[in-house]
Image (cartoon, rainbow, N blue to C red; front, side):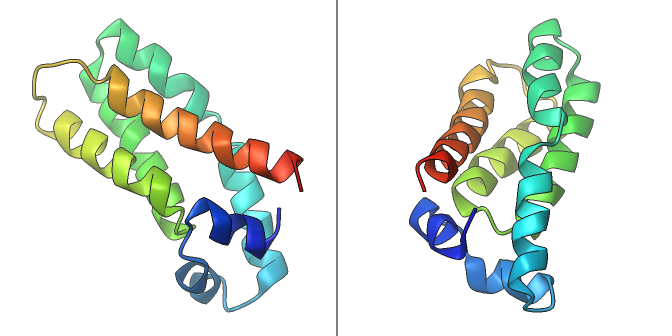
Length: 114
C-alpha cells in the first residue's frame, strides 16, 4: 500500500497522515491493519441474520476505523449504514453493506496491482 494508491482510491491522505503524526509508514501500517479487520466479514452475516443491535455495533466500530484512516469512499457508505441501524429503521441494508465491502475489495485490488 502506498500514499499514491490511497489518493487514487479517494482517501483523504492529508487527514489520515495528520492522525498518524504525519508518519507515512505508521499510517500505511494502520491502513493495512484496518483493512484486515474481521468485522468486514462479520457485518454482512449479522445483517443477514436480522440482528440490528449487533449490526449497529459492528458498523459503528468499522465507522471509527474507516473514519480514522480517512478512507472516504468507504466512510460515506458506512456512515449512512450506521445511522440507519442506530435508528433501527426497517429496510434492506444489504446495498449499503455491499458498497462498503466492495470499496474495501477495490482498494485491496488496487494494492495488488501496484
